[in-house]
Every structure is written in C-alpha cells, then in structure tokens.
Amino acid sequence: MKRRSVMPNVKDWKGPKSVCSCGHYGDGTNSHHEDRYGLAICGGHGKCTYPGCTCEMFTWERWTDPFKDALDAERVAKARKAVGR
Image (tube, rainbow, N blue to C red; front, side):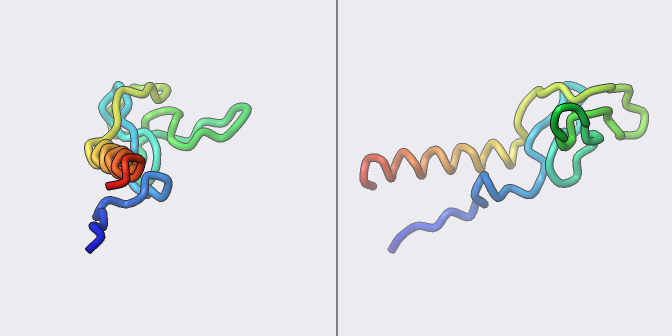
C-alpha cells in the first residue's frame, strides 16, 4: 500500500509561512503584516499590524514550524522518489 502524506503540498499552503524578526507572521493567511506595494504586490511584507508592534517592514526571520514540517516532508518524498522507494 502506498503511503500518503498528511501534510499539504507546499505550493498549496494556505496558512502563514514566514515569521518576521518582530516575531509576527509575515505572509499567507492570517498575516500580521500589510501588503507592500512597489514594483509588485508583496503580500504580507509591509508594516506589522499586530497591536503595539512598531515593525515598519517585514524582515524574514524563519519559517513557521508547520510550514517547515511541510517543506521537510516534501523534500523527503522527493528524495525517496528519486531513489525509487
């Protein structure tokens, strides 16, 4: 029987992916940052909207734990496929 991952595909991820240096979510659903407008719209990369936060622009710090787990699961699946497992 083929194993099926319970993690959603990374490209279809709906929740927040990134955490800003201020500690709040930066992109995706439930972002704490405004969209930033310039040459392109960068969703969730502007000023932080979390009450009391003074962050003026999203600065990537790390992936959220659930998104990191999904990335790791996808990498493992690709590696297994490459070696024929």
